[in-house]
Image (cartoon, rainbow over all chains, first blue to last red; front, side):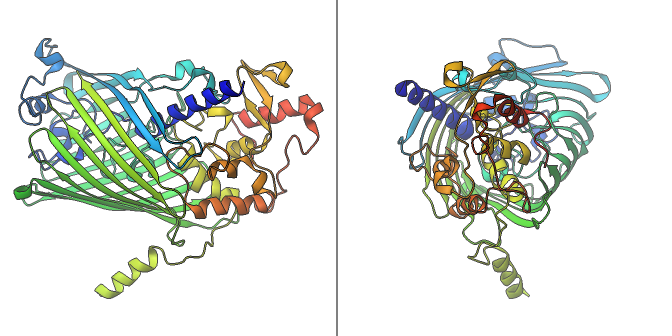
Length: 391
Length: 178
């Protein structure tokens, strides 16, 4: 009996780690490539006005001819299938291996598991209108018997079928105004794929936290503005519980070698209303093939409970991305999540190394090493490897 | 001007070693447990691993104090009862008022004879200490509310209808109400 329980706990532990630490989404992209590739706007390579998700023809050409170590055909199914002009399709499939140590009594945890299986589609309609959606399976590696959705409005088996994004968009030109209605992440800050980074996880953009939004803005060569009204996922109750408004503005300078952004977000969630604001910067230094990135956000929290005063949190990231050879990105990141700015030791500090290799179009291998230092307690050490294939 | 700006930054970031935060569930839930534990694959409303749901203060409090957990394989011989399409089983609550040492929650946060939680990043020590202080103060749901009582404290092991009600409250869509 004890062995049975131990096995179940071990299985749960591996699964939780796999999902909590490592799962990635297609809704984000590679901010390392903005500026460094000469593409200043995210939607030069992605259909979505704020970037992320399905890549367009320009993005497929870039991955085929410039961004992979060995050139090839970046088009859908390596160019073997040509969909009609009005239809774009894609898919993401990932598998991963993780080793994690948190000074636990059970020792380090190791596990290999499927990470993602999503299909993506976009249908272009007349007058600049389009419909986009992803459908897929939530990366559930956990023992199904341990999934208990006591407040769940639907069986957990159904909850594994998900649609991270689905929206209708109006954008008559690649540059200019746009409107979007549906489920996606509101544009905000540096949109790394790694949801475990503090600027994503702790600011409302963790895995599967997409909200339902009405978003609009402008994308121009030199600047872009995104305004979003957002609400919780009331359909699957899988995503965020927050409702509010978000804004992101970015301007580029010096022949698109420098980008500076400002963002704000007001989110009313369970037990707390969070007003966050911050800024980011990116600078690509061509001679060293290096891009510097930084983001900092202040979060002012007002609690619903009586007798609990407002508190302030700060979250920041500093990073360097180096492109030593074609198809390889080495990213070094330092992070700080100061849970409360008035309490000096109440913080996590982390350092992360990411090695992304795109040997051929459609294929990516990523190795990540991450050290997290919660103040006053044991460090968390994570080694993560994933293989990614996209259609 | 520059020196003044630098001073302001230093003042804002880590100005005190003292923890002046309230040891109150109304702070602990939204500032610590919801961001660290209620991730979509763990103790979210949808998944609620182990029947523990930290997605909002009401559900989180009920999860910690109800003394029941959901186990689809639980049997009547173990004292479990059917609820909806699953089984709920009696368990020692995760939090024992006034006694952090006996609270499984604290033992998991410290990896003290229990698997570490959260499994991906331990909480900073000040946050764990705040949780301990909250329990020492009676693990109240509200600052001026009564201390936590559990099904077992109330001698409800024999009164299953009340227990089932407590379990029900912990999983109703409206939560327990604050």
